[in-house]
Length: 335
Image 1: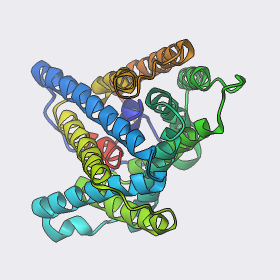
Image 2 (image 1 turned 180 degrees about the vertical axis):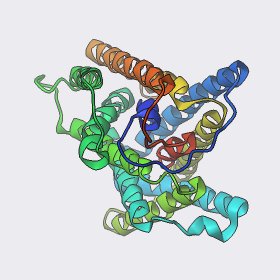
Image 3 (image 1 turned 135 degrees about the horizontal axis):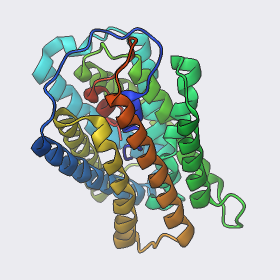
């Protein structure tokens, strides 16, 4: 899966709770921002390629098994990398309960998305999954105590309208499979909100917890649907996990070089890559409504990113909850 357009709002949305002390970091230079934008665009290409390989595998293997295979590669890389960088402390979370909840939510998002790919084209599934900002807006009120303004609700409503244009629920061709990536978006949104409540956690700890707990959860499901893969499928699965992990690595590097609010609009390039790669690999051409819906989703997200960036620059008179860029990047880890 790809990172939905919730990057800026996850970083800068204001919840009325006390924040931990914030570390002052050097302001990113113009050169760093340009490089970071390039890294984000490159990461979306890797994520789209990972989704295309997932759809290829989902044609012959159960969706839960495909998600599990992706997690095997992801967990292996994350566990080895985190232990190499931080040692055993990477395995000691400060908030184990929230870490478990986040890991379950992110794993659920991956599972729902891949199940949806069995019936939907990659561009459609990606566009539907990009409705997660609507759910983040809704969940932020009861779970984070946020005050959500009319403009943010309007942008969320526009994004939801874009998803409806893609799904076409009243068309005879509508399939209930479209609800699967929507459930994935809801699960993803829950993971994003929980991430915002763990700003004091080390990023490597969050990554390891998401990888290990998610793998354990999917491992419990796989025996019920297991089909022994052939050599080709194993090779594709390794490529799928490597592509997704590489995309995540590029995303983390980007967030270290520039503010997430500046990078958020470029996550929508994912929709373009998804459509192009779907055409190249599966000869599937997005219909007019899918293209229009994607444009509406992107427009609503770009508006939100602009508003959030302006809000981030405005002086604040009270202590606000803030998430450092690494926390936003962590939410993409399992996709």
